[in-house]
Length: 255
Length: 334
Image 1 (cartoon, rainbow over the protein chains, first blue to last red):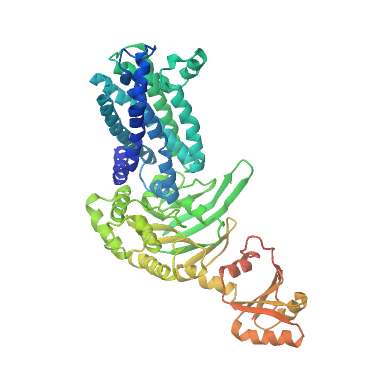
Image 2: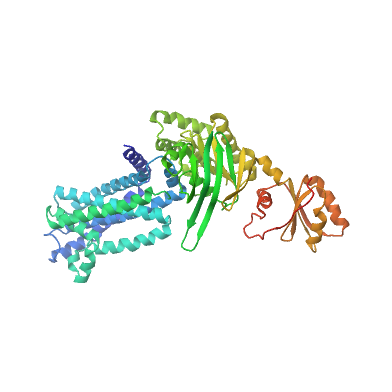
């Protein structure tokens, strides 16, 4: 099928260019590892105090899923800059003038972004294990699934906004305005259950809260409960919405 | 056989404050094997028209058939049959990725156009050789010089041997030697492969050197059409620009009837004369002014430029904020 072939063509091309410049892949990993190394031990102390919201004993099993989503958040949300740079040198128009599927221009990139993020996620989990995280393999794999879905959604939105605005000066503040509140409201660093009612209410409105909760359930070995179902529905629904919007923008007649 | 047929193509850009009509009703017809030039100043609508014909922009009005496919109904069909080389000004445009290698850019491009895998290496090698890029396959695109990069952009537009190629300002920003080299290559394309070439330019010498036919576009409409020879004949030869001390009106009246003067207009404080055989007419004109006691401040003789074509055809100068020149029709043509 021509669309699949086009997607793979763009994917291979993006991978080739990425591998030539692995700096960004490494930088993307550094931030969450720094958090693990410098913030993790503090969290362990906090968890020992018996605060509600932490799974029995292991602060890292609480922390690593949050770090994975944070890595996905920051890693995927900023890919829009690459498409602005590509637009500026004329690469995007060049692709759009060929018979290649215009949707593949998006999906090929998304595939590369997800793959990169998954590789980073594996490294992060290994570091977490070294710090004492304990989680079942199935749970970790489910966690990777959530990371992939989150990555696809955020990257799609980032590419869409990048293609629509074609300006780093517009994209950068927009992203910062969105990403930081999401990070604070999703319970990445500390459980949102620690917060007052109004804060928990606002947090309920962000999709990532549900996804992180579901990941933590998976890491604790609980696979079939309402939290997990909520997480799956929210992540898939969010991804579907983001992909739909992105495809409309990428396929339309005028760039 | 007509390879491009466009009727009433128009494109308006709507912002919150106003509507900009970049292209207002362009009709054109290009036969297979022609080299046609779109000549006009910046902002005339050349690139917009080109982007409509290459399906990058949807026309707000009008229809077209490009390379046998309907522009509005079958844009994908158009895309598979044409090549397009966009403008490259400074670090923008062009289409080649700075971080890729030349060889892999060509290969990738060929794959985008579904050229069969087995043919790609030979096709790429041939193109690189033809465009003087042989041996540079492993170089990163960003290490190329301006001329080399432009040639790569053109190679990318040709890798699938299209019947019709659109070139947007192919030599703008290049040094003179690169320009004439590129002209050679473009001529060769048509001579050896019968490729139809549709290019845009704001250089009259480029239109003159390459095009069978030139379409002059201004403010989104085609204002003149013809072979380069016809256009130059219309603006009738050389241009003498002179300024006198005192009222130019007297001088204008005096010179208007002189032999060889086809047209005379006032541009600010300067008089601008369109003259046949400027070198020969000049002494006579100077003597006329001298005998009338009119003191001249400066004088300049120039070959026709795009500015002159424009002034003649549209009645205004190319410079953005110039006043419309006052024209005086000259009765005697020689």
